[in-house]
Length: 248
Image 1 (cartoon, rainbow, N blue to C red):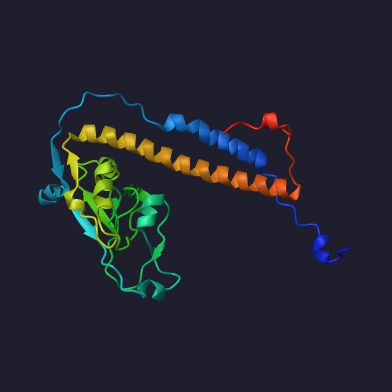
Image 2 (image 1 turned 60 degrees about the vertical axis):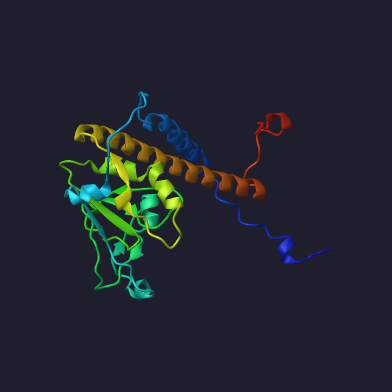
């Protein structure tokens, strides 16, 4: 008979007490998705006049700013109290700034209404509009700040252009060590009210994406909790018959 202690110890049961609340959270998040998609209508195809970001810079309607790349090891030398800067990962995730800024380096500080765009090639295009509470945050060297004249350009309209397929094509054609030239990006020439309507739709789409991300994380947490609960006996299946198992 095997009397080794491991054979007779009862493993700690996983905490499954929050599954009921997790189900309610999943249902609430899933229920919001259709409401967040903006109402749109098809329009006849036609040509649109466009303008490049380079032209907007020449006209003084846009300013492009970026922080110089830090030398290797500078970030590690920054103390724990150092300020945190927005990175490409933060632009993609919509999360808080995450990269420590070394003291004494030349840094760009964002304003409300700035549009943050990755300078490096990324898997999917993305842009982030700086809110009032985020103003005064520095940016890392791999992010370009597009600062529009808000009297003529809507920041959220710029953000949807930088999140579109044209930027994706440009980014995918670049070498990994290359930088995206945002000055070559083209955008439709539209009156400010039209820009604002498109920008408002993009804000809804960004909230839709964020809710999808939350739904995935909440669903994955619930799945892992149920897996552990079933393995350790803290949960048991209510539907035991094979016929109750849904087809994929």
